[in-house]
Length: 432
Image (cartoon, rainbow, N blue to C red):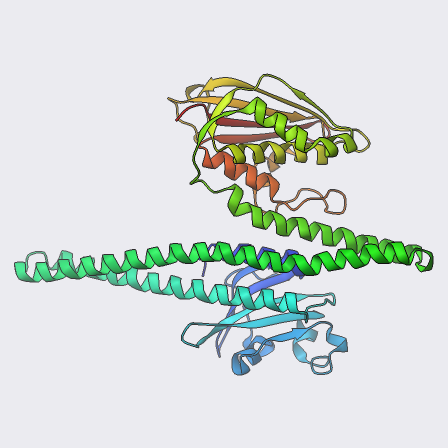
């Protein structure tokens, strides 16, 4: 299960979408409940490999009837209000769906709990869990088949080594078997590549399906604020504003999830890119945002680089948006962009080649900055250093920037000083 890299991202999406504090994939048998992958935002305490007594879990009951269990609020649920599991583990909302293999055998559950009540028994949440449980089942099946094929292949190699002095006819038969097995592995690898493309399509469609209920939530929240302004208490207005802001944040997250695979693809044609022209276009697109925030952007000399034009454009847009967003409270952002030419031999960066020439781009601001120990964490997916109530954002923008630089065979180094600002040093190749 640890080899299936997509699962932590699925758990992140579930937590971001539903607000549930603990999300996990569990292996459930008649003897044990074992955590395979975990996202824990509430300090529940379980890590991958951790176990619960099987008789204390609702998942044990799901193993018997193979049906999902969804609880919005334990005290209000007629069946589970006196159940021993919520009382033992201290949760009020709960959702768990079975994960079954292709042959129908039961593997475990995709589950989530939270100490607060939640609205889970609604179509878009149930569909999200069902889709992701099916996706985990598929990857589990593929991983098990590949592992079995690899084991068989290794066994045949050992047998070949042990039998190298045997009759030549036997060696020819064994060689044929190895060739057949290699062909099978290639076929499965090609199939997995096709499935990954289908997964991208699935993510795109699923994300669009999530947009519709979010649009309705925001529409009706805004409508109530306008039409019922005179009848709403100050607390009611504040609650509706929070609902609208939460829906907007989720819409932005879904949009970034759609954009992520597109803006980070490496197999796009490269060409010489005039960075000054690209930045001017980005500034025109962001003119309204810059004017509204009062930000100033100072451009120094900008050279050319060898890259994918629309990705370079996305890189500058994300970095400028980041600088404007994290300005000092009450002070408009001050951003400076400049570049110079340098060689890889002059830089102590393992990502760069010593015999290549690079365009060194500097994007600096005088914003809130960040502690030096977070200079790498800020590029991780869904990582935020500040409260979402204070600063909007999805935690994907800088991840996209890092991936774009990586696609171009370059490097990026972030430097920050709390209360003084941040500088992003980007190194992009100037030629093929």
